[in-house]
Length: 571
Figure 1 (cartoon, rainbow, N blue to C red):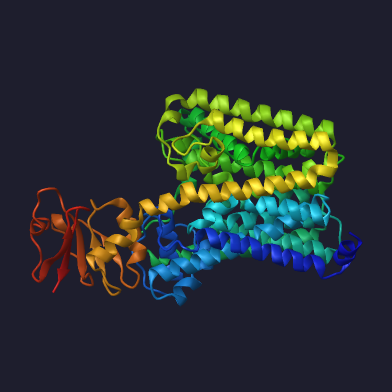
Figure 2 (tube, one colour):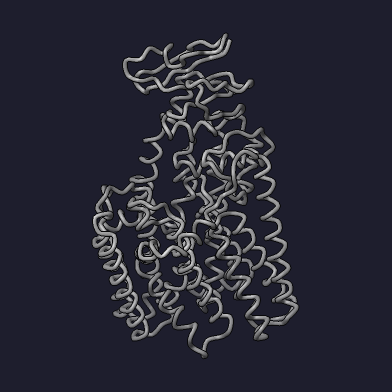
């Protein structure tokens, strides 16, 4: 024991241990996803891949999602396109980039836990558990901005806390500038970043008004936010320039339009509650404890300015994200419109660090009080959503949209809110019972158990959700290209009626050429550069009849009755 303590006292020990932990997290992620070699989440993945392709200097092609989305994440993965000469290699490389980026949650969660007063050992255990939970890792198995958003948001709040904490002007200015840069880049990465920028601007204005930080440090924060926001605008402008026939995303406009329409108010509130319920259960109830604590901190003067501002920002970010995403969702009764995992998942590391820190630091009575209030909040929200949505929650739900809920309910066939709530609260109750029975001495062991449970949950969700999801879409992504004999230099016109998954995938799989979606069979002329046309082959229809008036020089090259397509070639 003394030797271990002596070893830990060396200045190099913790940097080395953190590096090893980060490498282990990266390897774990690689083991889960490195075998993936084609997009399967349509049209999000395909659109990010197309933008990354353009940012890597390759020719443009059709934008699958139909609007231009932020390019911050595609910019990070674009090096894969500069290296790889085929789509499978590019996708493998992106999975590697995702693992490296997403694993940064671990060292940042360690820093956040240290800010919450945990020892290095306890902070290390907490960070390990946080970095292994499914909401953090699940989306990094696909080409999605949610890979890097948790990292940006952790860095953002750590920097905000550093800016508002006592220290030298230089140190506080450095943190303020970092806060502004992280906020702006989050906006360049996803529409949710708009909430981050708004809250950062609000914090800067309030802090300047009350004099809670040196003015020069606040000016540094304004500068960082201004530079990064300008960079986000320039990046968006560049990407939009490459897709001149595609409009920019209007999600933000839709959010405000729906919020102003009283007809949607009840639905928006119910969907907001649904996202909060999912968020709290996916954190095994610790997110609810952290939420209750943050609300308490905001109104207690005995906490520092840094703690109160960060607590307010966390609560506002959670509710703002849930509300904005609920207002921006489509107006239909799909289950994942009422209860959805993705949008608030990026906030899981922030709240889970706080929730686990409470286990270490809170006394028995305050801990029990926070847990009871948190459990009541989860139950009330669940009942409210179930009562309002009603039969809509009984429809079939894609496992991809609610993976944590299905895992906690021990069912991969549909959404079971009550069973999910019970599963989450059972995990929380087990941790609390051990903590109350053994005191603070057993907390390290309890967090170790949470770590093992989180790793098991992540592997289980990968086996039962991620891999089946991709396998189901394999033919549309790579099988069709191979069977049709499409080559590296082909440029293909796609039928509007072609399988939607195939149309989305081919924008990436046609790696060197490009695709267009056009109604050629109705008489539209294929672009001059097109080398092939892929049309739908109906039942009992001759392949030659799929194009009523083919242009001279075009002929049927291949077709598949099993999969319902016919390929016409020029020449």
